[in-house]
Length: 210
Image (cartoon, helix red, strand yellow):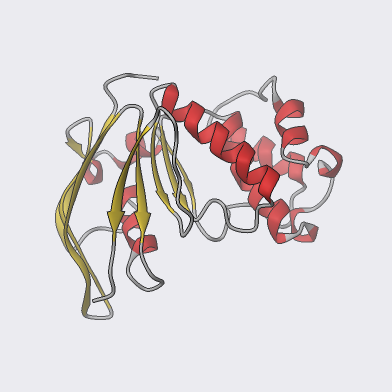
């Protein structure tokens, strides 16, 4: 990954239902750094993440990737990021294997050679032919996370990624997240859980209810 990748937010403001949700949010992330967003429910964590993905536009302020406004180059920007929200972004009518095959197709990527290993580590190897609609909440979350590890992108934007994961899978995910940062990746993560790494730089942003 490019060691000069950079995500920057300048004076972001967001309004929801004609009321201010947050204002004057600024930060800068370089390769190998993570921003941990915390705060009570309703403080705007998910809304901020959607702004950072380009799926929503800020009421004020700007978001830069490589010093360019993401709204001017959305297609190119989206090619550099993974976003996992509350809905996981999986197709319930497709099997586990078909969901990952579709993800690879959309990213113009051939089937990864480490597919079997990742599915085993995520306890999904025996569910490859199971329709996603029949998976438990934890299995659906693990399927969504599998895309992070199988199809590398420099920027991960993750909304409560530890939700519904058992302790072993949480440990595995956090080790993969730290490795992503070690390999010059960038991450923006909302979480009610504290996240600490031995070597990676974790910056913090706390949102409060208005």
